[in-house]
Amino acid sequence: MTWIRPMKLDETEGASKEIIESVRAGGRPVSKFLLALGRRPAVLAGREALREAAYGGSALGRRRVQMIAFYVAAHGG
Image (cartoon, rainbow, N blue to C red):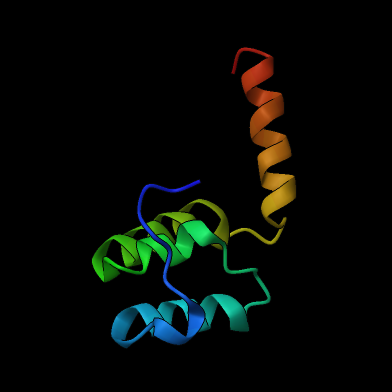
């Protein structure tokens, strides 16, 4: 449960709408968390930039990258 009321998909506008549409176009689900961040387009853009930096440049895919990171962390790396 978020403290900030999430927007509805039809309420989004401007930069938030563009970012959320790109999330949908990429086949990712739009969570209530993203819709709550949509009230602050700069924050939503920053979150998506961080996600892209962490997971976007790898051909392995997000799940495999997270599995490797977990393995390395678990073995003291």
